[in-house]
Image 1 (cartoon, rainbow, N blue to C red):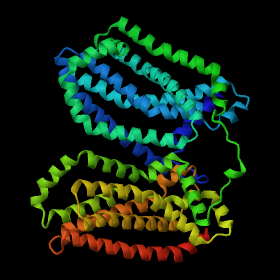
Image 2 (image 1 turned 180 degrees about the horizontal axis):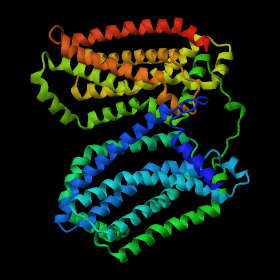
Image 3 (image 1 turned 90 degrees about the vertical axis):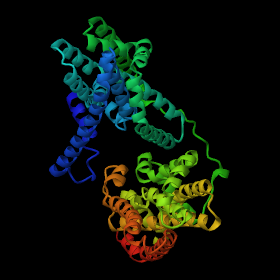
Length: 536
């Protein structure tokens, strides 16, 4: 039974993300395509980590801190595995949807728990391989090692993910307890996901600075690791110096927490996976019942559906987060931005204010083009579409509510960015209106375009909602189409029109074109679009 459960968990881990349909089986061609994609990503990550370790190994060897090389390798493995598996651990062990079903069957609790742990452990080994293998290859190229050193490295490779798994199980339990006390799980998941995304971009931006500091301050970092991170120090010494005492110390710190966590999980698995939420249920009163108008009710329905899935929000509305982030960065780094603008102003034809207006408009619509909410709203109805079609509602009202959702969610962040640009560059009233209105007109066009594409290429037969915003044809066309429009607008002026028309007049021309497209697109939505919706 354990073998069968493990097979099912592995299929859920690797195949579910590839399947876009509930009925269609995964084709061999698609499996090959995804396999090649995973191999490509693996090669890229191995190359990145290999480059990182190649930069730091020689300074560490020269300064006598060769062991710190393996200490940093272990720290990167722990961090990468922990961040990559903590949410999956929480979902797989504590929050799996089939817990009640499996526990009701004549299956040993031990087998259920082990099947989940083995899948998470496999994921950690994959993450570790992407880091540890290039690290040991780089080390061998600079400092050949003997058989005993290789054996110790293999022992560390096998046991290090066990410690990470214990850590992930503890934090996964804490997340589960917190989520049980908080009504809005979607909001918390969204905040955590955005936090990880911001941390990623921050680390990428600061990586050259950190590398330089790491190379020049290796001795100081080594002293910190030796005094504060005792298990990591012994892990590193065990590999670099082939110190068997350090190996025993490291193994005790890695294996004891793992054994203890697994033992506690085995004792409390049923209680942990079947305990109910601690959130108090409110009592419905007559005064709590409120009624809304038809259009507001339809809009609120769309809003609740869209915000119920954090992965859908993250994938189809990432431009909203980018817009707010860039608006804040523009204000915080306003002096640096002004210096850059002043340095390139002599190269520009026309006044600086004209280019500022055109540039701000282009940046805002460029970031907004990462939002493709409307391109997924028809498909997200799935097999529930018949419910709304069976109600005595006009098709126009249904389509307008979906259109309005995209507009209401995307326009406020764009206006915030516009106001930030107006404040930083002290634009006059006319320029300020242009910087506000042009992105708004573009967002309306983007919303209409996405909804029309989704009516043309809907995807109702999906395994989960995330498939709609990641793999559907409508989202792909809408995303590439809006991005292509932005590129054509910018490239068209630079390559073709800059000698014939000023930047500000070109901005006016684009605004007029967008208004025409908005009017025509809305007309098309209420004629062809309504007929197309009636066919579903």
